[in-house]
Image (tube, rainbow, N blue to C red; front, side, top):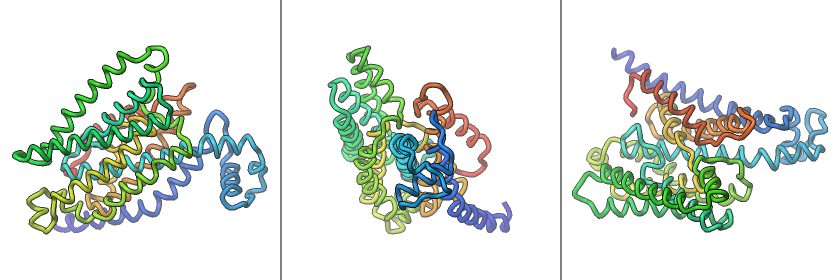
Length: 354
């Protein structure tokens, strides 16, 4: 690559980042409005805007009567709005966690469940279903299970200090995840095949069908608490992605910063999985796309991942409830869309991942 090309590449990246910052929020808003209108009971876009305006501002728009139609209000505000908001929050959180893990572990194949958070959350939820606990308790067990799994992995990594810390964490995550997967399989064998087993299978495939405003209110504090260190330490994240020795040479205390970033990304992932079940590929694919658009600088990569993750899961959820006569679990669609797209990225990308 010539010197002029090297100079022009960062400028193009900054220009794409600026365009993404302007166009992405507008496109995301349009996607949200379309998602609120499309479904078994279609609602015109003008009526969707009118209902939202009447709810939020007390204003009637476009001269429609939708704001006074109780059926349309119920469909838009009580049926579709919670799951659309859930898709926005969960998609943004999983993408941000994926971008953080990929930078921390300097590996393009890393996803938010690399340290066993999804397996731990799944075990907690499956245990709650087998014990016939209420939904809130199942979600609480899933959240606690995800945090406990990562805590166990980190304890193993802390105990085994004679190896590379990043490699130790990854290998411990693989081992703990396999162990938790075996426990999940055992509980599925012991579960009632007529009532509990279908509920377990559906939960493990991921869905926003049962998302409620109460669920969103329960996970938002954890999401905010988990995202806070990712935002506040975003410039240190750039140095962490260089490796431990280089980061320490530049003044970053990696032994203190890494647990904080891991804890933040884990908290976000556990909160998301506790409500939606396991939704794969979002935290793996979206950071790659964001990195291609805005570059590896975490100060731009994090907001780009948040926006793209929210849009991606919202679009996938729209497909899940409209592409077939029955609702398709999100985990199936994210894999069907994500795997071929990842292979395309792998075949066409000529740059390094970072």
